[in-house]
Image 1 (spheres, rainbow, N blue to C red):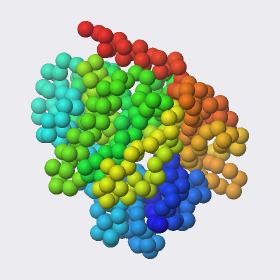
Image 2 (cartoon, rainbow, N blue to C red):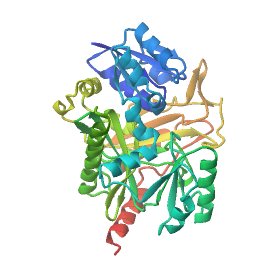
Image 3 (cartoon, helix red, strand yellow):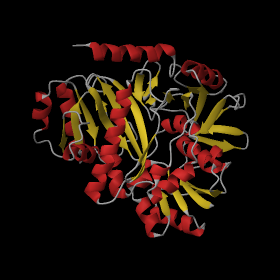
Image 4 (cartoon, helix red, strand yellow):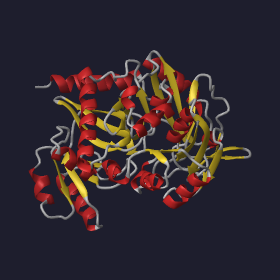
Length: 440
């Protein structure tokens, strides 16, 4: 039996907390968070609000509570080396070390790693820390291009030609401004296809693959509006996605496997934790868009609600290097996750306004709390994604109908993406991929 520390306070961490609480191995769930999360707090043995950027504060809390296993939810603590510091204190952790977390922190590192180890997953790209050669590289490109600032950007830093700027000259100006401000960036060709997430858990050598999921970054229906942290996601009953071929899944899994081997070769120790690959299916196969070093949010909700394995058993196997002894088991159902967000999100969200979720039928959907504050008279918005609802059914479109019916019952100054998981939107994506694959 283990006393388990979970770091983080979002809906992703709420999903992880439910898994830990359900484990036969858990003998207490301790939370270190940046703010209150009423859903996590209801599951916790102890809930500490503190500075999650302060490693020593987290380590002290872990030692005071005699923690035997730490699970790190968000990317920022990983980037600042919390796993390294916990291990020095004798506390085993589910998550990569600071060096290994560079896979998410630095897009330049990731591209160069894959190139060095000849993993065929990169688009045409080049890394720039100065303006030298930048304009020449961009003007010589035969396609539209993408600007990726190096560093953590919360999923909102990438700028794409055709969306954030129109001409190469405009893109050059934006890129030069980033460099002038002391930034480093990656310039790469714009890829045309359908994006999907393939998340694997790694023990340094072995991988545990989750089903494929598709995220929706744009704020509004029809993939319109600004990028967000993710408005919702869906997965299908067959663990693939309607627009993917079987070999697309296999190719993405092989890229994750090759990347873990490259990391072990480079650093002399294996990558332990979540390897979240953001991929894109193309006419010619699959390419990697980026890696994250933790579960996705919202993807974690889709994947963890159907996970049948004991999550703490998986964490233990990662730490001991015995993940190959665990056979992945998932409930064979489709899932649709939709986020409720404040009016004005993401640029100018309303805050400190009450919402009412009392009419939602929790027998029909799973509820995960994110940026909400529980006060004596109810829940209040705090300015970011507020609550995620997940519907499950053997049929994808029935799962969408379930979650849409329940999310409509939430009252307050909020909105959500009604089209996530709908037949109309998914069939558009299927037709797009058919057209791309058949185009000579």
